[in-house]
Amino acid sequence: MSQVQEDMSDQASKWRRGGIWALRLVVAGVLLAAAAPKLADPVAFAAKLPNYRLFPDFLVNVVATTAPMLELLAALALLSGRLYRGGVWLAVGLMAIFTVLIGSALARGIDLDCGCFGNAVQAEPVGALDLVRNVVLLGLTLVLALDLGREPAR
Amino acid sequence: MRRDVRELLALLAAGLVLGLVHLALRPDLPWVPAPRVEETMCGEAELPLEQPAASEAPAASFAPATPMSSPGPEDVR
Picture 1: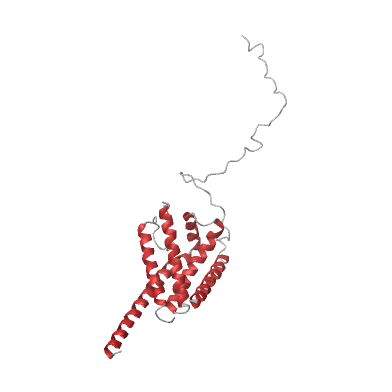
Picture 2: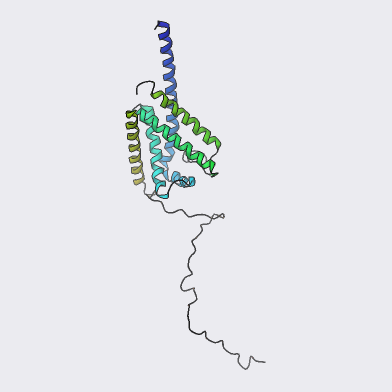
């Protein structure tokens, strides 16, 4: 490979790494912003979960404390690089589940506050915009997952 | 791939354990919540239908009903 080609390849690799780092920061930031208010006030989050009409009563409080903890762990893994690969897949799974939950509520015409960011934001009925936001976030995490195959874990 | 699964399982297990510890440390968040009370359109809790209290219910009896007193002579005109 010529020197010019090597330089271009290095440059592309730098840009790709920068982009991946930006994606990590965005996804981790969203996960942290979602986890913090729910961890601070799990009672408020637990009150919103039954509105989805999907969780049996005995699981509501377990989900209300476990889900934000998983969000926190995924964010920390993305930021720190420790258990990075697991953190990426956990983020993909969480985003996929959230997207399905919101889509299911919309499809059934349930007028609920998604509780995605706990009580940190004004309670508003879930809408198509929430679904689009989650699909975009799911796409970002999938980009991170696809990048896992391109270079060894950090 | 095996490493990905191992790390994912480790994070899931850690999240579950920490979540359960968090739940155990919150006395205001019971393990199994009380059944939700359905609300009416007026926002008032709908109470379950109850049987009338024993004191209010008329006592069932097979004894012949006491005859009504017949009108006295002063009532008869």
